[in-house]
Length: 85
Image (cartoon, rainbow, N blue to C red; front, side, top):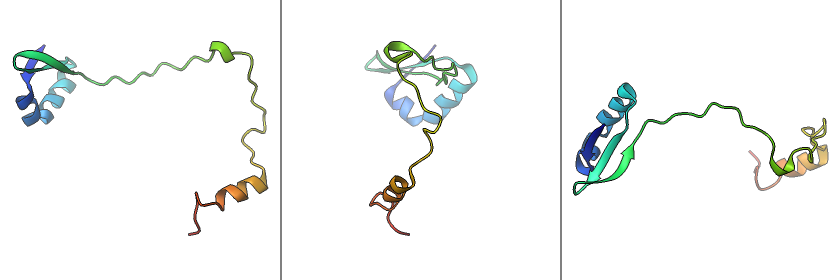
């Protein structure tokens, strides 16, 4: 694991990020010889969300949920949120 100080990290951030992408290994950033932060690669969580919890089985979404009432839609889109073009 690479260790670098704050001033080196500021001066070489692009290089450090490139190195992270190549090695996938975190870099420790130190100040006055003591570790203060870790620069680590971002890993996107691609696991699907699980529904459940205390609302499980208590909520039902109707089939016409996405259909907007015409009068409500007009008042919404003609409001100050969406000024005339």
